Amino acid sequence: MRYARRPHHREHHHQGRVGWLRAAVLGSNDAIVSTSALMIGVAASDATTRSIVLAGVAGLVGGAMSMAVGEYVSVSSQSDSEEADIATEKAELTEEPAAELAELTGIYIKRGLDRELAEKVARALTAKDPLAAHLRDELGIEPHSRARPLQASVASAVSFAAFALLPLAGLLVAPTAWRVPFIAGVSLVSLTVLGALGAHLGGAPKLRATLRVVVGGALAMGLTAAIGHLFGVAV
Image (cartoon, rainbow, N blue to C red; front, side, top):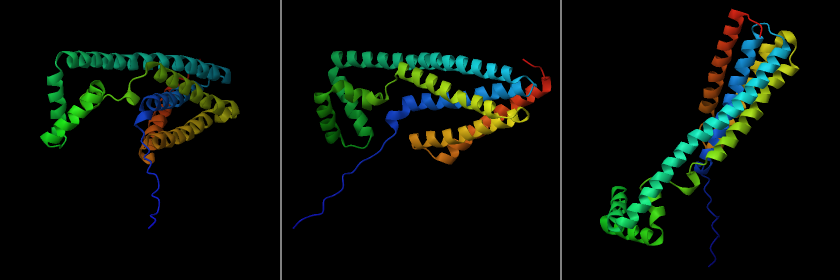
């Protein structure tokens, strides 16, 4: 008797994207919101188009550098903490292997295994790679989710610089009388697409993620427009 061949089961997980995805989404979202808000605030003060473009370019360069440095410092701190935990675990495995084996067994018992099976699993994983077993099951550190400062820094800076061009593009195609609506419109549409894309890549609900970035961006642009109109100071 011939049996039908079962299709290969493939699972798609998003955890491996967390590091660079978080940095890229943060950088692109901040680029659109901060650059458009800055330009709208200047435009609302009746400034010249040249002044608005200058403000946008300055926001692009300064923002990209700020995001790069901020991400690098932040993720480097996380990486340092992970390295310290790994060094501690290595020392404990060398000095107290029996205690570490008992600790690993206890972790599996708490997760639902009976003691006999938990001991077998702990011994098998310890024989294969004790450090990897403890990093994964005791500390929650996986190789694919380790902090990568340079990756996060580059992703954040590049995404900021790229998406900050969108409000500038909206300004360059807008009639003088419609500068603020054009910048805001391009920015809100971009935020909508960005929110949906980020949710798709991360496997999150699209509507909630989209509303979060669009509402936040609209509030920021509205506030800076009000300030620019209120003071009416040309830059």
